[in-house]
Length: 369
Image: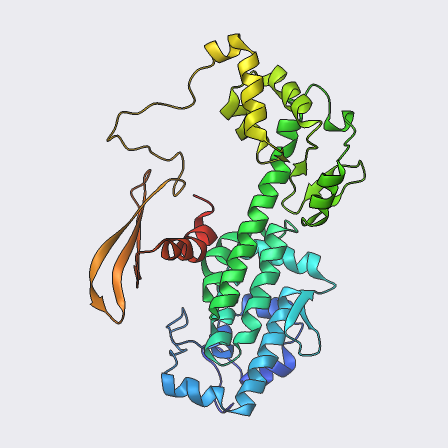
């Protein structure tokens, strides 16, 4: 241990851990050390760093000195990324004070995405999997919530997240991605609908009934400063007494039918009895009902509807496989636009298998289909 310099043009690992901390330019420009600090079972770009064997991994997992060096190497690279460990167990991570300049470097030098992928994988391989999910969630938060590190987004979704070994933690991260993607889209599109109303929604004063207040007290959300109740998914709850008036105001601008109004309202507002209200208002206006075109293109049976972008529209089906290690079926997903096919072996052909595949494999990489 620590008896050989890493190659090419290398130093002893102990020298790197002792003397390279904070040497950002050196860590950025030197491309040989990362494969030696964070070895894997797969061959990397450095041909001098050979893949680990199973027996080597077991030795490294059970050698205290190596485990100590692994954590020191982790701290070295976190400092390079401007991330620091916090908490009693030093597992959770937060931004460091110089994050602005270091994040700029990460956005510019995207080869660091490969380094992060290697670090996440190696920590899982070498018995330090508890560090994986906190680090991946940190980067996901910076990308999806703080709007930082946008050049890292593809790698975070396609490589960082799937590398987390713990199934529960990986699923939780996938749900985190889904939640914040939906939330971000809602924030961006809300002004589009509110601008269709003849006056801002603040024109109305919300007056929730006692029954509604009791229901709202049990729902996740909070009252805004202007008195409207906003659910956790950022939809505004319209009081039953005001809902018809507000929907009527929307119709006066859009002249849409029942379905169109429901689709316009649903992402942004929770409207009690929305279907009945939209139907009643649409029926009041005979001219609109007569002249509104049917929504969408009516396709004859047997003609495939094609998505507007890659992986936005999928055909999904199961096929039978020869049984192997408990797997009996193959879940096949095909993009209707590009013809790209992805297939995953499953033990059953139940809906849960499809949901699991979408949550773990498709949505983190391609977004909502």
